[in-house]
Image (tube, rainbow, N blue to C red):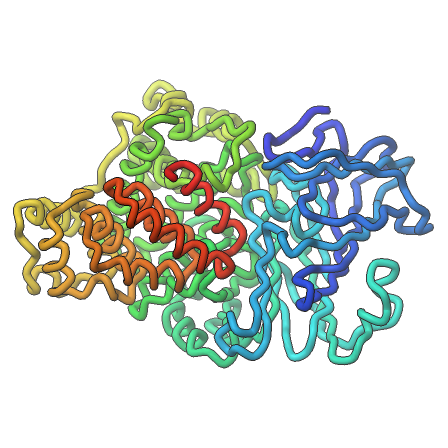
Length: 611
C-alpha cells in the first residue's frame, strides 16, 4: 500500500474516482441516511480499490450494471481515519455501494423541530472538512482526489435541500429509481419529494455539502442569494448584512481572475454550526454569529469567497499543506476587504491576526512542530490541530513575498499561479518550485525553508503599521495602568476595534477594572460575538465569577468552535479552582447534544488535556 495522505486509506497505486452518483433517503426519524453511491473510475481496474468510511453500515457492494455482488472487506477501525472499505474489482470502471449512515456520523447534525427557529420542522446539515465526508458516503476522502458528483435527495414535505452543487429539479419520487438501495415503500411514501443536484466541476470530498429543512431565500444579486430557515428573522438580517456580496465577487474577479463556480450563494445555518463559515462551492455555509448588524460580518463572507480561488480552485493535497488553502485565502480576503471597506479595515484584520498568531505560539509551546507551515500529521486528528497558524503565518509568508517583489508583480504571480493550478490539488513543494521558477532568485532574498519548515514566527514577519492599529494598542497598554478609554476615544469603534483592544489586554487584570469596563460599554452583552467572547475570556482569566452566568448562556447559545475553545479552555485552566472546572463539566453535559459532533470532540479533547 502507498498512502497519499496520513488521514486517508486511499492508495496512490489505485485509480482515483472521477465521479460519484448518490441516491440518498433522509430519514429524520432515525437520524440516518439510507442510500447508494455509484463510484466511477477513469478506466477499468482490476484488483483492490480502498475507500474511507466511518460509522457507515455497508449492506452490499455490486456491479452497477449486472447488480451481481463484488467481494469486499473492512478491517478494524482506526480512531482517526475510520474504517477502510476494500472492494475487489475485475475489469470494472464503476462500483455500486449500498449503505446507511449512523446517528453518530461525525459530519451530520440532525436537529429536532424544537432545536430550529420555526420549532415546526426538523433540519439536517453536513460539515465534511477535514475528514468527515467518509461518514456520509464511502469515498477516497482526501483532497488529493477530486471528484464530480450528482445527487438525488428524497426528503419529507415541505422541506427543501441545498447542496454545494446546482439544483436541477424538484419532483415526485419515481418507482424503481432508488432500487436496490431504498425500498419503494420508503422512497415513494406519501409526503415525500425528490430533489436532484449536480456538481460538474471536480472538488475535494470535504467540499461535499448538504442541508435540508424549511429553508427560504432572498436574492442579493444576479448570481448571489442568501438562504436561512424560513419563519425566522435571520433571513431579513442576513440579507441586510450581506447586501454587498455581489460587489465582493466582482472585486475578487478583478484581483484573482474569473469566478469559476457560476453562483455564490450563502446559507445561514442554525447556531450549532461549528465554524464561522465553510467555503462549499456554490453554497457557502455560515454561522448566524457573523450577522452583526453593521455589515462587518461580511468579512467572513470575504474569506469564504476568497476560497473560490484559493482552496476550492487550488486545493492543498493533504492537511499537512493546509496553509496553501488558508494562508492564501487569508491574504486574498484582506485584499478584497481593502478594496471594499478600506485599508484601515484590512490593517485591523492583520492586527487581530497578528495577535492571534502570537497566542498560538503560546498554545503550542510544548509542540512547536505544529507552528510550522508544512507539518507532519501522521497519527494526529486534524480537527484537534486546527489553529490560526496556517492562516496567519501563511498570510505573513505571502505578505513577505509581496513586500519583496512589489504588489503589482505579486498580483501577476498570483493570477498565473491560479490559472496554472486551477482544479488541481498541490503540495507545498510544488508551490515553492513554481515560486522559484517565476520569481528568479527569490530564495536568495527570503529564507523559504525557514518560513515553511521552521518553527515559531520568522524574524522578517511584520506587525501591521497603521494609525488606528497603533492607537488601539496604545489604549490597551494604558488599561494596564488603570485607565479605561473615554467615550470620545471609542465613539467610532465597531466590533473589530473592540476585538483588537481586548486581545491586547493582559490575560489577568484586576476584577474591578473588568467590571468597570463592562459597566461603561456593555461588552459582556455585545451583539458582536467576537467582542463578547474576548471579554468573557478576560473575565474568566481575571477571576470575575459574576460573569459565569454570561459564559454559560453564551456556550449554550452557539456551537461555533472559535468561541467554545477559548471559553471552555479558560474555565478548565482557570486559577486551579474546582468551581470553574465543575462549571465547565456541568455546562458541557447540558449543552452537549446541541453541539455538532466535531465541536463535541473538540471540547472533550480540552477536558482530556486539562481535567
